[in-house]
Length: 265
Image (cartoon, rainbow, N blue to C red):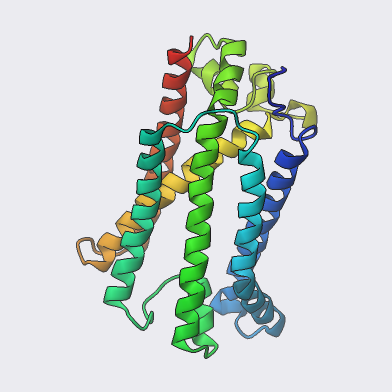
């Protein structure tokens, strides 16, 4: 399938670079989160890796911003003010709410659950340094989320264009095309057995990004309610909220994409 924008990661260097770097950073942070676990606190290598990763968080985030900025330049969609501001308000508002109630309720960050903040506190870093690092990292990664939203708005025409070219005939067919399976059979989409049967990563990027940023915003609002003692914090409750937030954001993404597709038919 050919569009004005090459959605194939194998042919688009900017898209490929962003995907590779993002996956690498995600895996890196995942391993660091495991290394921070108290079970590995006595392992010197694990502790060193976790602390080094914590120091590098702003740098890793800036790398994502640079690559995402380049990818956004390839989108040909116009930024419409209302949806732009609505999305940015949800992203920034959720972050500010969570951060503000955290500082108000635990100014020394003793009750902060962020593992990367915890390791700085537990290794004796001054509170001023922890605050500076924490706020800078938060600002950078909130900026990443904002750029992802802007990226979706700029690339939405490419996503809609693939839907128009495929002309899905059912809801399931729509989901297949919307997740990058326009050139695949239903069996290949649901049960790929070869690399050539994998869907386009370009579509998966936006599905994942929108689910992540808006699911995260919903969860941060829930976390703020915990800080304010409106909700009793429980492990099960948090897990349920994470799942519900992700599903809500995912459904919202497909609904928005469907409406965009219908409006351009």
